[in-house]
Length: 252
Image 1 (tube, one colour):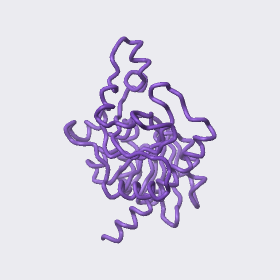
Image 2 (cartoon, rainbow, N blue to C red):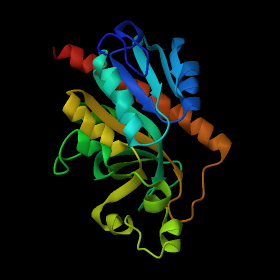
Image 3 (cartoon, rainbow, N blue to C red):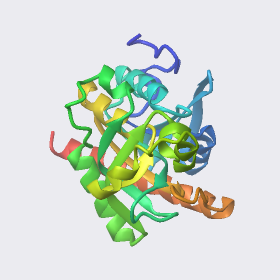
Image 4 (cartoon, rainbow, N blue to C red):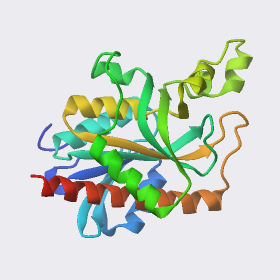
């Protein structure tokens, strides 16, 4: 297992010291267009892994699909072959004051999914690496792009827990409504698991997502607007990982 990742099929020679975790395979291929000297390491079981360079630093991008269980598998395997820093760059539902098109940096997450509990007890907080988060926050502020920082809530049930309409059809109160008053600003399916698993695996991690779906109305970003925003998301994430790695090296 430590020589070649079981499902990803990659070795230490195939990956960089930092990796981006994306859900959509198309986003992994978009990343390959942005990276220099990019190559597809492996495509199997719907999992796509790409490695290239950004400003001279080798980075890996791996697509896991959807949901916390497989996101954790991909992260776990990459950590076993030497990746030490992870950044989830994905999409999220707006919540609270967050608006479509905002980039949302997680300062922590409500653990509504079940995967993280297989790594650490539920009482353990889902929090990002401070150094990586600080770098990302500095980059976002310097660019002046619309963004928010705050708490995520991650769930397993997309339709049954995250979408109000489905909850109302089931004549149940939405489990997410109470979270708005507690400062939650985005909903997804993976962030809390990524943050908790990283702590258990001894690696650093953070989550920065693009708000593409409006929680209450279910309206979505237009295709062209979303494509441009995803390029910006990837560029910000790549810059953040490169700076994070350089700071880590300087402190060694």
